[in-house]
Image (tube, rainbow, N blue to C red):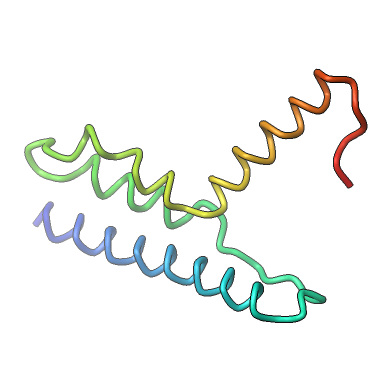
Length: 95
């Protein structure tokens, strides 16, 4: 039963991740005048939960991978690093 719940969580996670990548591709192909809305963090967190709850704990060491694959979390990390770097160097924030 626990494995079935993990498989469902993992499948929903993959769905959210695929939608985020599809939105990115659609935005890159468009004229970029409108913004696409990502489903923030949901895919990465559901994937992490599925891996943490897997019976036997065999996937615990790999639970960080869905967070890295989630575009919203990756963009938050990169944006935060750029913001902190610019603040430390004394430059204006990116606008």
